[in-house]
Length: 370
Ligand SMILES: *Cc1c(COP(=O)(O)O)cnc(C)c1O
Image 1 (spheres, rainbow, N blue to C red):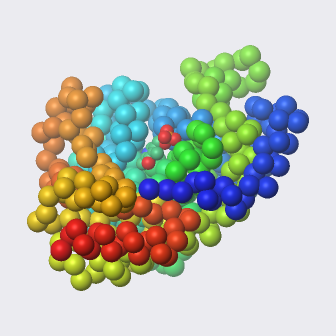
Image 2: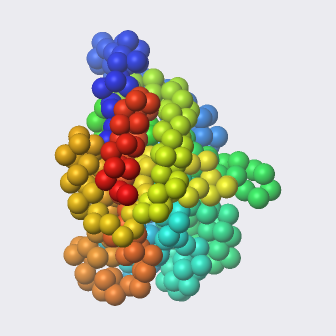
Image 3: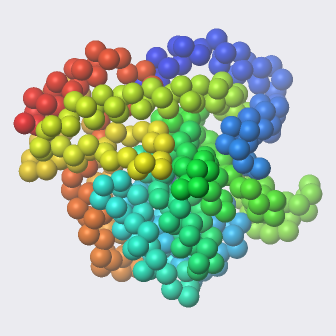
């Protein structure tokens, strides 16, 4: 699905030197590499504060803690997402309220979202799924009307942006109150282990977030609240300092691969290629298409037989997971989510895809799905 080895070969000298610097200086925790990365990412995203942390799941948890959410508060999230988005809601004793997605773009449906708002609703977590911004203009307007906080789960769409109808462009993860991301190796900006970050333009929230990520510590050994221990280590920051400079190139490479798939499958009646919002600059963390009137398991099997990997993201939506049975969530009426779960399939997409390899994949897909 990805080719991190070839990608590394192209930046090896710089990455190796960065890692060696960390080891030579022994500044393993919160060293200069972490400070450099924080500042570079703030500049890249055009956001006031980036707080690095240990992974994308922690980032979501810390974001919800920083908003002061309390047990019983309702948080609206899509069910059609990676489980981490919703898991932290349950972990903090908050109540997940599952929102349906738009069948064409896979992102949160703003009309359904608004219908789910109650007087217990405190926050909304749109997910920029597969690399495409959720319809933030609509979501932000509804949140403002009902005075709700927005946490953008930007684990899959860093490097992408959204253009508002007044022409203003904003980086994904910087439009809501808080944005979160993951640097898991296969993400668009991935390190060589675990990593994550939290973004905000709000000084007060930034202060809370930094404190929570560091044992609720105000000054050394003075702890104002119960927090956690969530850090990006310096070796991972050294890798990210090199890769951040490549992020735009990486996103362009993914878009080129997506364009080729789109073109190749456009006239196949059993395939629906992913739709793009005009306002969203899609950075294709995944290339996920829909299959109709064909046995998907068999397609996956036949692709494997030809050496072509594929994945189902996600085979069971969050509202059908046993972990949420206490919320009676399987009775949530999420028609599009259930419909999509039966039909999606993701093909290999990455920064190092050679045109001839992609032609091979396309040829096999079209041979199997006809
Ligand atoms: C990867 C991912 C996360 C979690 O990130 P980790 O770094 O693996 O904890 C959260 N949300 C979404 C949408 C993701 O894709």
